[in-house]
Structure formats: structure tokens, C-alpha cells
Figure 1 (tube, rainbow, N blue to C red):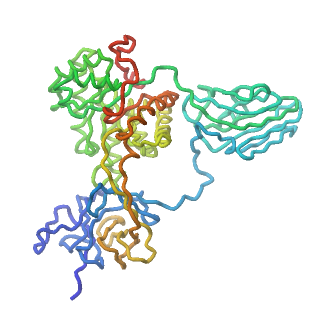
Figure 2 (figure 1 turned 60 degrees about the horizontal axis):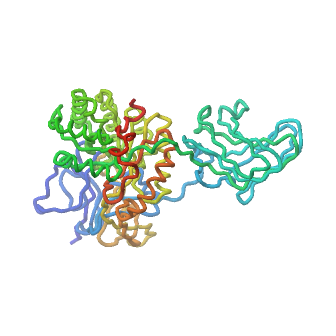
Figure 3 (figure 1 turned 135 degrees about the vertical axis):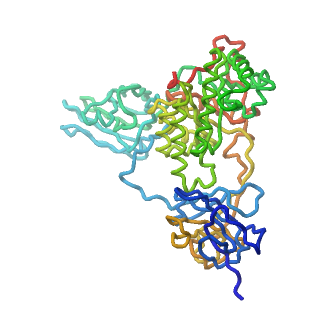
Length: 587
């Protein structure tokens, strides 16, 4: 008698268990597909009203099943990483694929120019001048230019496929010269017209120069080149270092912010909440405010709390958040809560008003997001437009993950709806924090939307990273199996990940064998066990990020054990008694 086979099958969500297996615990995964009813992906005994393919393994050998998203590109993956909370039984948590290195594309879009590092050796040079009196070369990260005397303009154009940050910048130059060279820059438009914007002189006596880049009159996103102009007389120039440096704002750093998720904290002891906020240097609080229909039931207590906060120099924002708000069925209720806050603000005196409403929605947390991300993103974008219309002038803040920097459709919707975005830049490595924040700060300048950068200091449980590599014909525990429309009844092929309890061969798909694991303790994401580092890092980030006009301050999630007040208490410093103003784009 042949051993029973497992079936990888697509079933209606309400499919009952088989009579002979009423306690069937076969792995399943919810499917959310465009224009489809609710479905489940199941791997186990064959069920009625389901369609799929047989797998040459017993049903009890299947540990877990889930869909692979198009962005996973499992057919191209060299390695699949599965992250599970610790401890955990074999199952799927989050999934990451490691793909082969991309082939460089000569026509690829420009990348961001490097900050705080010598880029002289990365430039391409081209001489100009009808007299052909210039020679140059770049070696070992240094640029050397030799000019003969002449009467006509001549020099060197220094270019790279970069965009410049939308920040206040200066060009720091370390050099040696025996004549005076002029340095200027050009964007695409200026280059087309054969003109440039002066930056300053590299004279023979100095050896170093810090040349501010113009604040206006050019487009940093379309920077073309720097121009080094030779003097009329013969001269040589050796540039040892070229660095772009940020020019921080001289204004006071924007206020820090944090969240009060439990409404009973400010309802039961508002003085304690404000004292804690002052002690930790928080000048903006996002608070959960209960609503009922189109009203705020605790409006009197909220008004009293808001006035005390204003007197202490603390701005209050209501915070709302649920991934399912992105679903069309939840849009009306979500906009209704916003209208309740707008109605509250109309009824109370200015000192008692909320400064705005923050929405922490995160639609990617909905089950099935990976297979229908475009549909969920569209629902989120629709909600943004509805919220903007319902806000009645109230500033709106939207919380977004740092990896949305490439989500152009969502960023366009945010540009039209948001007064401010708060970026969850939840990393502890300083260079990673900067690299994830800077594209959003640039985006904020281009779209006139303020940007707040958030760090994590709360508890994050350990998780274990399990690594699976291409099996190369060996028995394997993880299989990427394509379900074709003729087998599943779906409109399009669906890639499915099947995790087995024991390595097997002969399944119809791409095989990945288990190669090891490592424990991730959360230290790459949260500063919970690194409070000294966070306290030292925040002022540096605040100073540097202030070079972007869009920067609206830092937020820290669960800061209470890690952050202390960085500025004088507003009770003692009258100059700081006023709450933070709403974002510039809302004023």
C-alpha cells in the first residue's frame, strides 16, 4: 500500500476538516489575492473543494507553508533566511532572500554623493579650453592638475553619477597649490548653458578651504560637475581630499518626541506623564485618545491635560494605528475618528488643542500582504487622501518604515497628504541610521514635507536566523514550489515555500538545504541595552540632520531608561515655554 501523499492545495477559507481527521493540524497560510474570495493555502491531507498538487512526502512531514512574494525572487535566490522568535518550533516567521549580485547598469539612476568621506579618487575628470593647456590625473585618491599659461579660459571638469543631498553643504578641500584656482559647480541646466556658480578660490597660501555650496539657484538632484578653473599664469594644484560636509542649522534643535500608548496613563496621572516627559527631554507626545463615534468622550480631561502640557512646553498629538485601517472596509471608521479630533479642536480654546493626529498604520503587517501588496498599498493611498480631506486643517503625521524609501507610489500619496512623516529608522549602527534617514530628509525637502527620524529603545525579543542554501541535488528541508493556474485554479502562478521536518528529495521545485543558524538578540535594532550610546548619538544626529530644512526632530520609542533631558527644563527657561509649532508645511 502506497504511503499517503501530502497535497499542496488552495482551499476556500471556510473549507471544513475531513471527517476522518477532525483535528487536522495541517499547516495553512491565508491568501489575499486581487479579485478573489478569501482563500487558504494548505499542505496536508487532500481536502474536498480544494485544488493543488501532490507532494511525494507524508503529510506529517510538512512543518510549515507560506507564499513567497514577487520581491522574494525565490527562483533567483542563492540563500533563504527565515527569522523566528526564540524559542520557536519549526515554522515560518519573516523571510529574506539573498540574490546574486546585480550586474552594473551603465544607464542606472544617479546615486547619492558620499558625505563625510574623501571622494576625490571617485571623480572622473575632463579638461576644457581651446588652448589645450591643461593636464590632469587621479591616482591613489588624489587629483593633480598642471596648467600652462594662457589667455583663454581653461581648467578641469570633475564629475560623477551622483545627486547632491538636499541639505546645507560645504565642500572641504585639502590641497597644495602654487597659483590661485577658482572652484565652482554646475547642475544640468547650468552646464547646458556653459555657466557655473562660484564657490571660492583655492589660493597658494591656504592649503585648506571650506566652501559653502549655494543655498539656492541650482538643483542638487541634477548636479553635473565641479569646475576647477586655471589661472592665466602657469600653476599646479594637488588635491589630497575633497569632502562634502554638512552645515548644521544654528537654530535650536527641534524637540524630541515619544509615544504614550496607554491612555490610562495620562487620564489617571497627567502630572506624572508630563514630569516624566520633561525629565527625559521629550517636547512632543503622541498619546492614545479614546473616541466614540464622532466624539471624544473624555474631552474635558483631554483639554485640561493639553493646557498643562502647553504650559510645560510640550505639544500633544493624538496617535491612531492599526494595519487594517488600510482596508477599504475600515476607511470610514478611520476618517470618523479623525473628524472627532477635528471637532474637539474646534470646540476648545487654543491652549487645549491637539497639535495634530499621527497615524501608525503599517499595512504590510496584514496577513497576505506579500501576495497582494499593490492592492493593500492602493488602499493605504486612498485612505491618505480621505484623511487629508477630513482633517479640516489639522496637521497629519504618518509613521513609515525606512524601507519605504523606494515605494514611489506611497511616497507620492504621502507628499499630498502629510504635514510630517515619522520614519521608523530602527537600527543601532550609526552609519545605517544615517543612510536610511538621509533619503527621506531629501524627499521631505523636495516635497515640502517635514520629516522626523525615530529610533527604538524598547524591548525586542530575541529571534533566531535560520539559513538555507541551494541544495545542489542534496536532500533539502526548504522547497520553493510553483503552483500553476491549471493546478490551483488561480489566475496566475503562485510561488510557495514548503518547510519540511526532515530533508527530502524529489519535490517539484527549487531546493534549499539547512546550513545553520544564529541568535539575534535585538541589539542591531534597539538601544534598550545600549542607553549610553543612544544618549551620545542623539545630539550628533540632531546636529547633522538639522542641515536639512525638512528635519523636524528625533523621536525615541520607549525612551524612559535610555534618554535624559538634553535642554533646560522649560519651567525654568521662559524662552522655551511655548510648545513646538506645527510642521512648516501645515502653517
